[in-house]
Image (cartoon, rainbow, N blue to C red):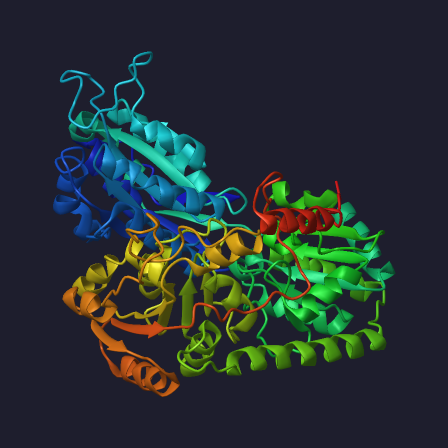
Amino acid sequence: MSTSTSTSTSTSTVRMTAAQALVRFLAAQHVERDGNERRFFAGMFGIFGHGNVTGIGQALEEVGQSVGLPYYQPRNEQGMVHTAAAFAKQANRLQTFACTSSIGPGATNMVTGAAGATINRLPVLLLPGDIFASRRPHPVLQQLEHPLAGDVSVNDCFRPVSRYWDRIYRPEQLLQSLPEAMRVLLDQANTGAVTLALPEDVQTEAFDYPERFFTRRVHRIERQAPGEAALAEAAALLRSAKRPLLIAGGGVIYAEASRALAEMAEQFGIPVCETQAGKGALPWDHPWNVGPVGSNGGLAANRLAAEADLVLAVGTRLGDFVTASHTAFQDPEVRFVGLNVAPFDAHKLGALPVVADAHAGLCALADALRAAGHRPDPARAERVSALKREWDAAVDGQRAIRTPDRLTQANAIGLVNEASGPRDVVVCAAGGMPGDLLKLWRPTDPKSYHLEYGFSCMGYEIAGGLGVKMAAPDREVFVMVGDGSYLMLHTEIVTAIQEGIKIVIVVVDNSGFQCIKGLQMSAGSPAFGNELRFRDPGTGRLDGAPIPIDFVANARSLGATAFAANDADELRDALARAKAEPGTVVIHVPVDPEAGVPGYESWWDVPVAEVSNEPGVREARAAYEAAVGRVRYFG
C-alpha cells in the first residue's frame, strides 16, 4: 500500500526521551501520490495534564516547532480529534494531525472522535497519556483500577475503535511501533484511528535511538490496479446490462477520480447517483448525475435504483442509508460490482469484487469497455434526462417553500448555497440536516460538500469546519449546525479565534432534536424528550415552554462576530456581511420545526415496538412489518 525511502544510512545514535523521539519521527514523515509530495503530519493538537505535560508537552516545546511539528491548543479532546479527521478528509487522507491528551477523562474524551475517524476510514494519530509502566505510584491519579488485571487502563477503550493499538512500555518500542502506525495510517483500504498509549513515565525516559530513525521519509501511495480476471468479468456484466447504475462513494473523491467518473458516465451512458461521502464527485448539473440515492435519496436516483439490473458501487461501504436498508434495489435479477480499494467493501451485497483504487479501476474499466466497442443505449439518456428534470424541479420547490412565521430548514440551506462560491465548502454532521443537505445542496466541486455521516456524530460540525479550513485556507467554509449539536460542542470557536481562522457558522435553530422527534412520532409515539423545553410542574414532563437561548450573545461571548437572521432578507444580508468579515462569524436562524423535507420513494429500517397500548404505535408496527417485506437479500 505504501513504500518508504530514507535519505541516510547512518548507524550513529542520539540520546533523547521517548516523547522527543516521537515528535522528531512524526515531523520526518512525508507522503507522495502522483508526484505530489507533502508532510503527512500538519501538526499536533493537545490538551495537557499530568499524564503528558512533562513528556510530550516538554518535547513539543523544545523541538516541535523547529522540526516542523507545530502545536495547536484546542478546547476539547473530542473536538480536536474531529478537527484532525475533518482535516484528513479534506486533504483526501494524504495529511492529518496527531492528538495528545492526558490520562483519564482527557483520554476517554477522544474515544468518540476515534470511533468517527475509524468508521469513516480517516487517518488520525491519538497519543493518550497512560498510567505508570513502572507502577511505582500505583494507583495514580485518574487511574481505573481493574481487580483482575493490573495492565488495564481507560486507554483499553480505544482498542475496538482503533485500526491499530499499542501501549509503549519502553522507549525503544517506538522503533517498532511508529513504523507500524504509519503503515496503518497510510493504508487506503484500512486506515482510521491509530492509538499509541504512552505511560507518563515512559514518555520521559531516554534511549539511544539510531539517527536514521529520524531522517526524512517519503511514503509513496500507490494506486492499486484491478486484477485482469475481475476486470474482464466486470466489463462483461456492464456490456450485458440494460439498466446499469453507478453509485459514487467517498472513495471516488479521495482518489481524485471525478474526471474518470464523468468519462465513464458520458461515454457509456451510465447514470451516477451519490452517497453522502460521494456527493460532489460530479457537479450537480452534470447530465448524468441523478442525485442522491437511498433513504435520504431523491426521485431520480431512487427510481433508477429500483429498476437497475446492474449496480456498479465505486468507493462506497454501502451503508443502510445508501441501500435504503436493502430495499432500494428491487429488480429480481440485479447484480452488483464492487469497485473498492477495500476488499471488505468490494464484496458487499454479493458483488463481483474489483479490488482497486477508484481512479485506476474506473480508467481500466473504461478502457476495457472501449476495447470491446461498447456503446450506450440512446433511450437510456432520454429516461435519465426526464428523471433529472423532475428531481431538479422538486429541489427547487422545496427550497422555495414559504411558511408564515419562520424560514424552513430547506430555505436556509438554499440561501446558504446561493451565497456560497463554487469552491466554498459546506460542513455538517448529525440530525435531520444531513438528509436535507444531501437532497437540496448543489455542489460544483468535489471538495465543496463535507458531511460526517458514517458515525452521524453530534458535535462534529464546528470542530470539523475548523479542520476543513485549516486544510483549505483558500476556501470559505460554511458550517451548518443544529441548535442541539451547537450546544454539545461549540467551544472550538475559541480555537478558531485564537488561530485567526475564519469559518461561518449557521445555527439552524428548530428548538431541539426535531428529526428524532419526527422519527419518534412516525413510529406512533407522542413527542417525548426531543425538544428543548422546560419541565412542566403540572405534568412532570419536559413539555413546557421552549427554553429561550441567546445564541448570538453566546457566540459573541466567545469572541465571534454574530448576527441574527429571522427571515430570508436578513439571512442574505447576514451571509453577505459574514463573507466580508475577517474572522469567525455565527449566524442564528430560527426555523419552523414542523416544516420538513419529505422522503422520496424510500425507507429506513428503524424498528417499531411490537407490543404497545398506544394505537399509533400498533398502526406503525403494521406498516413497519409491511415495509420489511420489501427487504432483499443479496449475499
